[in-house]
Length: 390
Image (cartoon, rainbow, N blue to C red; front, side, top):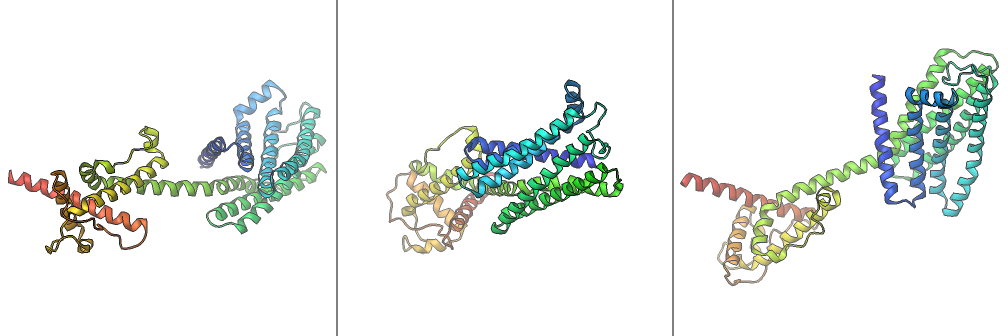
């Protein structure tokens, strides 16, 4: 169960990193986006280095504790780039860059310190496990204490900024920020508690196993919570875009009977597509363009055939057709199209057809879809009647 949960989390992290890299490729000069992308890349790389195969390869090729050192350096870089994200977001360009450069000094100093601790430690010193490390060895204690204190500083600062932005934001951004703030608070708290444990063990004391387990559990749960919080607004936006695209694609298909009938009678209403490539066909932007283009073409076609329509009361053209049911109006539209195809002179002036009840685009689309569905139903009924007659 734990392995399955970790696999799901790692898959989500990879997807988040891929999405941020895609966004960064489209906007490479966006400094906050670059910082959060580097933060997630370093986090993913730290998990990759922590894998047994990667740790064994690093240990065999260099120092025996090189894997643990690389993992902690990547975690420190994760915390630093997270701080840079807020610094670049809160301040203007020059001030944000200046503050980010100043913040790089302590993180580089911490990285150098833990590297020196690993390189100067005795050959038998084991840094691979926090729970099993011999904290009475000064280098081991310094390794975990210095890295832990910097993580407390960086994560607490980031949590403060996240909470501040969450209070100023609206949903779904605020929801994601509150989740990220909770994750950062959990990570900062767990790091602070583990730093205290390091001091206790350095002095020769013992820490009860349940306390170590609770601190480790809080840390393990806080990291996925932070990743979910960072990913939540973007995931919600993508889901909303997907739902709108699916709706537009469905309406586009529903309007096919009406569009086909009108485009045959009025081919000049068919607009030139922006692109006919397969990519434009399936991308959301292409779906929206085709959707709006079909609505415009259907409306233009109705305007051109409207002079051929006659009111059923025999009084000629008039606004009474606005009140006709879709099935009746569909029959009038079909007859008007046939008259235009035969070259019959228009007996009247253009009149409004399928007028929406509300003054918005959705109401207009509903009227067109109802008329198109009526045409489809009428065509199916006519086909069945022809088959039964034969």
